[in-house]
Amino acid sequence: MQWHLKSKTKKTGKKLNKHAKKFRMQKGRDYLPAKVGKGKVKEKRVMGGSSKFIVLSAETANVLNKGKYQKSKILGVSDNPANSQFVRRNIVTKGAIINTELGTARVTSRPGQTGVINAVFMEQSPADTKRTGKQKK
Image (tube, rainbow, N blue to C red; front, side):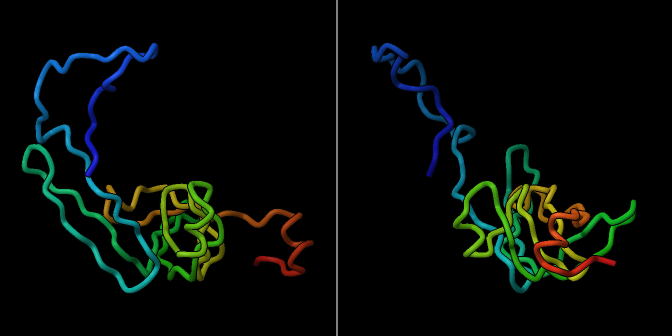
């Protein structure tokens, strides 16, 4: 469990006195990674009685291609700047590069906060076509 509280010490190292007790609203929540697999979403009650939807696993993504969203099957994660280990474990976060049936796409939504995976289609650069020898249509 994580707490979103002020530091107990100053920059100099001096100890600060506690001015209030902990409140439930200051509590964080455990990280639940969104994986590639059969779709599974968890509902979480948040402050004010609202609810957030947390993606635990997903098999499709809404990919923006030429101004229109298309639902596309996720094949895997090819790159993730947040953590290189997420690629091996097929964990999807905001900014991750995923392989879909349409091609490669960059995730623009936060799956742990919004409950969906939205992505933007990435055009293949000339350098990529030289490396792979294939050209996108």
